[in-house]
Image (cartoon, rainbow, N blue to C red; front, top):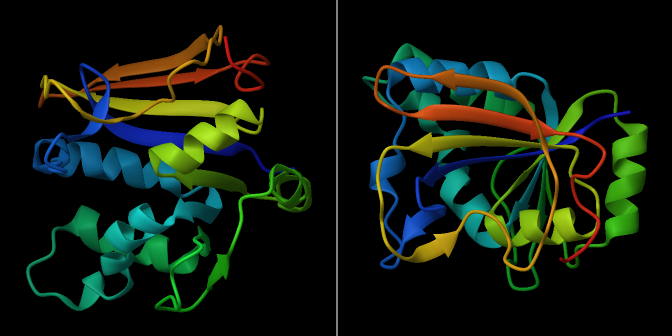
Length: 192
């Protein structure tokens, strides 16, 4: 059975993008990017909302771009090898192999997908991840916290949810980012 993991790069005040939609402050350096790659290797399927998929779809052809760092080229290979499920009511088509559209997020269907998978699944995008957390589907939270305050924007985690988590791992990087991995039986399953 696969685990469902929500990974995000967030500001110290809990946003994945500022109030103008910018997230350039979240760009990982080579050390952090290589670390993220190692985390992503266990995932066989990515679950995305439309906006997150549109942001990530550049990785389909990224490896062909000249001047990629080793970590970026490695991530492009990891991303292309994974299955991708995009939840959207408006997206007409998706680019690349191993990608399909689902019109609605159905927690029971995701539960069955987790049970049938041998590899982990990740959920990307705070809206979709929030729905998965509330439905009790997320087994692990992996947060990379950037040393920046952005003041407002798109929250990395849903409001109105109370969860008691267990810190499983922590790591500090030379660029000031910190990695926090949380799990435990209490991840997901309700609003506080």
